[in-house]
Length: 236
Image (cartoon, rainbow, N blue to C red; front, side):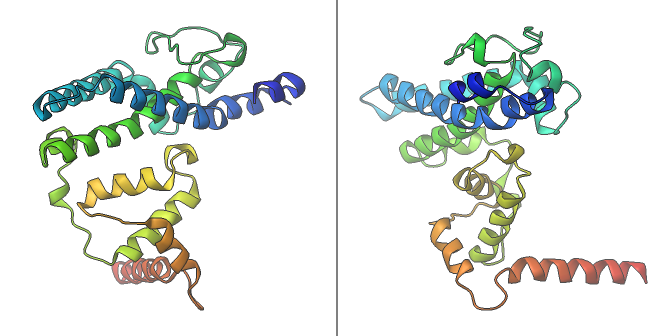
């Protein structure tokens, strides 16, 4: 990517912002994520489940501290704001703002803005949270639930799993989750947390949905019909 940018550069400032906000952080977030996972596996105690659980809980605390420190920037991105993009995602504004500590993951000053690597790390740690929870659940079933921000038991998906997968793929196709950078597995894991459900092999389910004869998006169409019916009823 860097060679291509060096060779062709950007047509205008908006193209540069889009690249450093929506394109570069996506692959970099995976590089950071797998670096975190590798580091965790190397440092994880080799014996004794209690020692392993204690280590993983410390990892959760470090993640929470990171999000607390960068709360302003995370909120800005999650709310899909753009009024500071020219400062955060343009190389013309190489300034460290108070809400953003320096990020040293693979940072190249000639190929970075003040916040693109921070945004990549935010996305990486979203994935890393799920990894830590899975490890905790495997070592000590039920132990990861204390770190969940929501109470999954309050919401239970009472429809079919295929319907939920159809909804998830629609949201994925929209690009409205994490600016289109979230993959299917990450989205599925989030829905598993929310609805206390296990979604096995979403790719196969999606293939079955695509193979339907006639109405392939029947659940989404049903939702449209039900909402239209409710709105018409409320208007009466």
